[in-house]
Image (tube, rainbow, N blue to C red; front, side, top):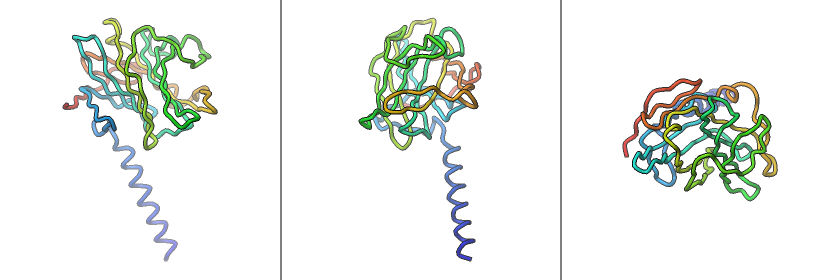
Length: 204
């Protein structure tokens, strides 16, 4: 009887965890710095989310990219790519937990099929770059100064292993090869698989 109750209790706890994980959407997410954004999107692969506010007067996109259900032994990245929904040519924001136990964000331009994943400038300005790692969630914050031709563009997001501050190659199967799509920072549309998804608004 005791064994049966343990099995039932475990099943209930597991079911509760799965429901709470699957129920998470960008609309329910909050940030430790209390920031709020006008738009958000549930990206369709790798348990990732994009939040942003477009300031037309300043020509900037204030954004946050969140990767949930990850670990301190994985890196997380989000990028836009004017060349199309591929990794090659992507202008990326990357973050990982370094050997000191601190989240380390940086920018890098993906210019080959075997990128160095080292710090490099992007084709547009990036300011206020920071990252947090809490509750197995990596969040990258930044303000992008992007030209008009990139306000509607392709987006790519990715994750992979980290060993001793060295970023390894991401897996080449499953969601890792499907994590591409489009984003329109003006209309508030964002989606995966090269198509725009539903528009989501958040109140400030």
